Length: 616
Image (tube, rainbow, N blue to C red):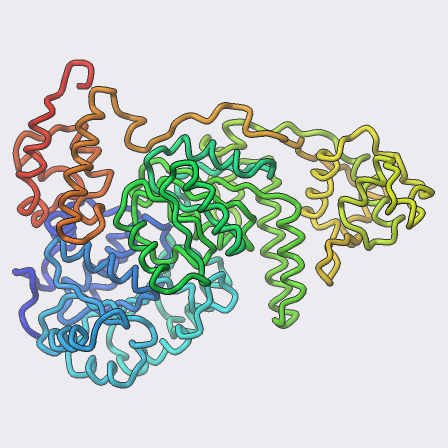
């Protein structure tokens, strides 16, 4: 292979030197150094690292050190483009090969591959397994093969992609090339399936933890969802975020409603014209302060580091999906919010969809267990982070202090008697009615439906007048979450008892429930702008000026602003106020090439905003 783009590289180069000079980071985090060393020495690896934890560096640095081309299998065009643009900004010769390229552009990339002038090539899984691509790769030395978003290979995972199943052929065709599979989201069974399907049973596993301490997790019971969402957006004025909805219709309605209130909100779902969908995604990636309202079709592979919030207006199917989607917030390590509003109808809808699915019974059981874990997380009175990490086999000894249950602990009450009344009412009415009707019976309401089924003559009629409608709905929601009640398999919302209800009905088990919150959180939401919160008022003009300069440069090049410098780097410039290139070079995220390209420009901006005593 020809000379690589960055000079003086050999197996003797220290990875830390490349980390410093190319990427501009002072040191490795977590297990990064150990992973890089293992791959540089030719070892296979399965890497599980949280979003924003620096997974990409784990294969990018070895690809720059080892002889040959580093091939990165990546699932989405947007992710490839984003990664390549970021690498090119720091002087790495990187390209992608996918369906977005014209035939001439694709031939140019293939010619660069054959000539040995590339460091890294990003390629879609479908193309990576084509015989024509395999034949091209067979003619050149390969430094490594990285399989990103490796959880897509798991049929038990939340984002299964059938095309990933063919990637095991890369092992048989290139048995001596080190391979690394990387993901941010995989429980034990998913990790085992990744290793099995990709032929990585002998690979060394590196699990670098799931915790994202910069993310604040909050969950609200659905009331006026739009008013609740506005409270979140007001705390992130002028910042980018993602709002997830279950249905295309709700996506469209929410985006339209937000635009009517002055927000730059774009819809994204699979039903949109492909061109419009691509344009909206690009507008989100390239812009500042853009909100995308989307189904879960949006987001995987989005590398935008300054997403300041992720909101869910409906319940995700599993904690894996929730973790993956909320992980798109705060990739730059600055404060971010993960907020969710959910209600009983979400549970009924998801349970109904699962029962109507054509999947086998084993798959349905797994999906049911995952949904139960999701519900348990929502209804827990414990620290959200502790519950979430325990699901992935990790633990923290102390509550995090950065979630709703830590900041505003929920009130609880002895719900044993109420639970017995509710469960008994389900039984007495025939185990086929939904929550609305059951609440009417318990509260003794004289409705046509109650009279039609003679439920005004049951022993449970009127025994629950001490609780209001919302409180009873909360009781039933928590009984469903605890697995004592199941939703009928036809998906009509009728409830039936499970074996778990028996000890409560017999008086053998007490039950503590959380009190219903009927409004927004009791403590007023504070403005949590990641950049503004730590800054004095006198520093904000410089912060805005740096952002404007970054946007100006990004627009000229047609790249996202964050590939110039991310928010964390700009924030460091504001705090440290470097006076020359030597000072600027010490800031994390600058690096040698960016320093040469942009150093004087940003120093000029800083020089125009001298610090004051109040802002120093």
